[in-house]
Image (cartoon, rainbow, N blue to C red; front, side, top):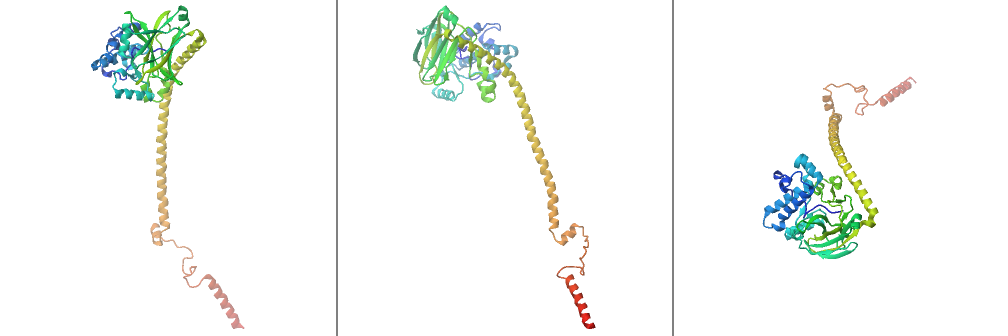
Length: 418
C-alpha cells in the first residue's frame, strides 16, 4: 500500500466517446515533452475547473471532467504514456480504465446503487469533493498538529476532511516516515497527502483508499527513500469481470508506483477524507518514524522487486497460456467432431446389418409358399419325402409296424408247414 497519484480521482466510470477522443496532450494543454510535474499541475487546474461539484447545472463540464481525468490517467502512467506515444489509443486498453463515481453529485437512488456495488465487492473509485480541494488550495482549512509517534482519533463527515500537519527532523526524514490510518468501525475513508502550492495553499499529491484488513479498515503511506508500490484493485477491473481468467493474469497489473517516495525535513500536510456513503467515518491517524522498522523496510523492498519480476513473467506466460488454450480448444472441438463422425458411421453400419437380419427372420418364419417364393419357386426334394419312406404318422403304417408284420407272416408260414 502507499499513495496513489490522484487528484480527486484520475479515472472515470465511462471513457469519453471513442470516436471523438482527443489527444491527451491537447486535452491537458501540454506539450509532448512536458515533465510529470507540468502534466500534474495542468491536470489539477482543469480537474478543479470542471469538477461536477462546481458545475452541477452544466452537463458539458461533467464530460470535460471525464475527458481530463482519462487523459491524465494515460499521461501520468509512464508505461501507458509510452504506449500512446508509440501507437496511439489502440495501444491503450479501455477496459483497464478505473471505475469512478462522484458521490457528492449523486442523487439518493444512485448513491444507494453505488453503495450496493461497493458492498458486493465491485471496486468503485470515488472523487474528492471540489469544496475540499478548493479550500485546501486557498489555504483556508483548519490544520491540527500530529507529532511523530503520537496518534489522533476523530470522526469526519462524508465528503469532508480533517487536516493534520506532521513536522519531521532531518534525522527522521533520513530514516523514513510512515503515516497510517485505521478504523475499528470499518469506516470507508481516504488518506490524502498535500504538497505546498505556490499560492500558499495545498495541492493534493497522493491519495490512498481504505481497505479492509482483518477486523478494521486501514490505509497507509510509506516514504522510505526507495520506490514504494501500492496495489490498486480497480486496475483492469472491467477486463477481469469479462474474463475470469484475467483475474489471475491482471492481478499484479494493479501494482502501481507511488509518486512520492521520500519526505524532506519540515512540515507536511495530510488529511483523512470521509468516504462513507451514508455516515461519518471514525478513524485513528498516526505518524511514525521508520527507524525501528529497518528490517521490515528491507523485506518490503525485496518482496516488491520479486512481485515486479513475477509480473513480467506473467505477461509472457499469459501469451503462452492463451496460445495453448486456443490449441486445446481446437483439439477439443475436433475431438467432439470426430466422436460425432464415428458414432454416425457405426450407426449407419448397424442399420445396414439390421436390414439383413430382419429380412432373414421374415423368410424363416413364413409358410412353405413364402419359402418357395424366396427360393425363386424351385423346390428341392428331401430324401424320405415320398410316401413310402415317410415317417409321418399320417401315412399308413410305420417302419416298425412293417417289420413286425414281416415276422408275423414268417411265424404263420411255420405253423402251416407243421
